[in-house]
Length: 160
Ligand code: HEC
Ligand code: HEC
Ligand code: HEC
Ligand code: HEC
Image (tube, rainbow, N blue to C red; front, side, top):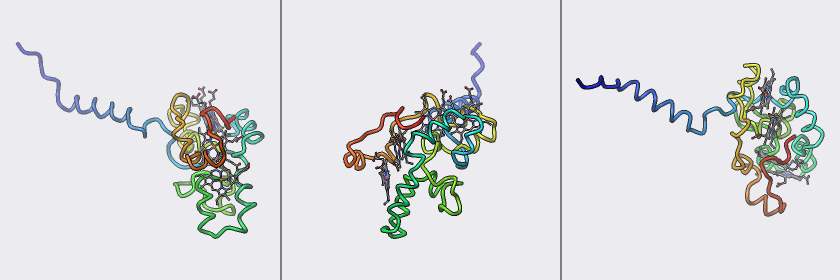
């Protein structure tokens, strides 16, 4: 007698699961941006190192010192790299409306943190160990900037 064929739905479900795990959206930071201060309570050490030593924590100042000379359109270009989540759900809107997102915070590297925070710190809801890539840094540390500043970041630089 022939073995019972595996039902097609089971095969499909297994395939879908595999593609979900391979797709870049899997296990990344999810949901909205919440700002670095929301991380402080549970990650005190990373937070205080970051606020003290990372230039990102003061990246709003770099924009503000030059803002008088810039048109509104030019300013918006700065926001893409110097703030957290500009133009994305829950992300930076303006220094007045969203001061907590005015610098390039934790979430520019770890991805939006709302789902991680709401779950009380689920590891698979934030970009963490083994799931970060220098490609994510290069959105802001792009080749043009690297040649201007003669500086290319490594994955473990400039964080905490
Ligand atoms: C309610 C507490 C809480 C808050 C708020 C919180 N976390 Fe976490 N986080 C945790 C816990 C718990 C872990 C898991 C620690 C462990 O098991 O080693 C964790 C782990 C992590 C990890 C490591 C993931 C890994 O793969 O190992 C990263 C990165 C992280 N958090 C970033 C953040 C960021 C960024 C924020 C702010 C947006 C934040 N966390 C806010 C509790 C929290
Ligand atoms: C959203 C844009 C953005 C992303 C993504 C980003 N950076 Fe940055 N980074 C900046 C900005 C802006 C500065 C400069 C801040 C200033 O001086 O005003 C900076 C500065 C730095 C510095 C300078 C040294 C210091 O003390 O802060 C290092 C190193 C660095 N980033 C590493 C990284 C790495 C590694 C990644 C990826 C894991 C990364 N960055 C991702 C925007 C970004
Ligand atoms: C594509 C992302 C990106 C954009 C857009 C951008 N920056 Fe930056 N900026 C960076 C990064 C990354 C650094 C850190 C040095 C580096 O690696 O290039 C930086 C560094 C700086 C610094 C130097 C800080 C220091 O410590 O010397 C100033 C000032 C600055 N940016 C202002 C601006 C202003 C003003 C705008 C808008 C006109 C702007 N940036 C647009 C990514 C960006
Ligand atoms: C410049 C990018 C960058 C920024 C900004 C950043 N991190 Fe990280 N973070 C990293 C990298 C890289 C790792 C190591 C990931 C790995 O081990 O593969 C890491 C690891 C962690 C871990 C896990 C530590 C462990 O030992 O398990 C926590 C928690 C964390 N970050 C929290 C934060 C918090 C909170 C902030 C903001 C205050 C922040 N990070 C800002 C890049 C960043």
